Length: 160
Image (cartoon, rainbow, N blue to C red; front, side, top):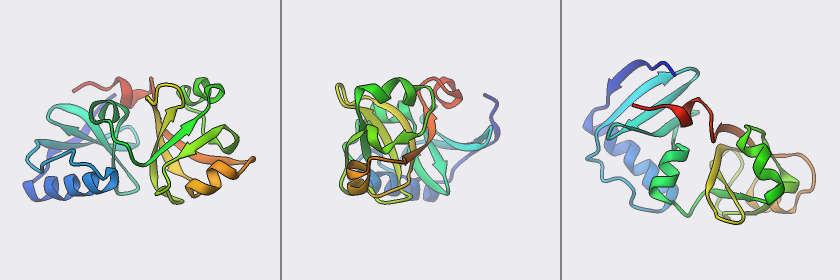
């Protein structure tokens, strides 16, 4: 993956992004003293935090990459899928409502969310919620989450 327009973020920008990420996950993940770079990477903006690709910016909203989710283990903004959906999600498929078995109650339509499996609760993908959490669980038809980043994609394989 080729990085373009890589630049070091100023302290004020780092503090702002850190606060948004901490508020999103209701967890003190970042202190605001991290070294953060931002870069364009083939259709998306990524955040390089302390020399690791741990964040991305989607629709001007910061979120953790799968590696960031594995490192910081948040317990908010998740959607849990059944075993039958895991293979498809890992290959980049959108998350269909029938495969959703649970979701964080704070998830609203258009929120950034992370997808996890029901057995081990490991992150499989990051996407945009197409419906509220309650609707995802109840609905038996349609897409629940639009997949943006998944295990094995270019962002997953990116190294700093």
